[in-house]
Length: 202
Image (cartoon, rainbow, N blue to C red; front, side):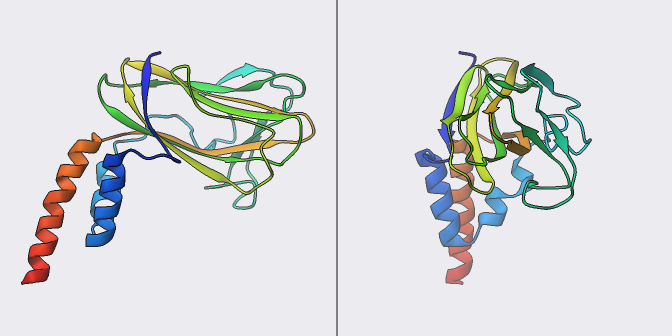
């Protein structure tokens, strides 16, 4: 295992819960969670806005996989394009190697839309570690996923696998960005909270 899964969207760790609750109470969410605290995008073509899989490596069955650019709509989460996948009888997907710094934390996010068809399957893995794996997911709009990982290697593979015999599954807005260590953000939030409370008393 080359990466450490630090938290999941459904079960954020205590440091992140503390930050969330604190900034909600002090009105500092924009400061703590803003873009200034995220590094540059590390993926190439994570939103598929090139209209192709440029930057990605095809894996498995590619018979019914592709990129569409219909503009904003039900099968596009952000921007104008999204990727669709419909391998029949076997898995097919995409992967991309991400360059990392050992010990740093990274936020992995993406949006996934299932159509409810069966049999179907979807999984996302980072460094060979499953982030999410679902069989026959129920139909829904786009679901947003977010994971915090700590790098133990200088590069890892972010991979997505799909199967949808009767229809198509959609992927969009894939992103990997470095973020401060949760404990560092907690200390920063405490400092900012102190400033906020001081101003309120005045």
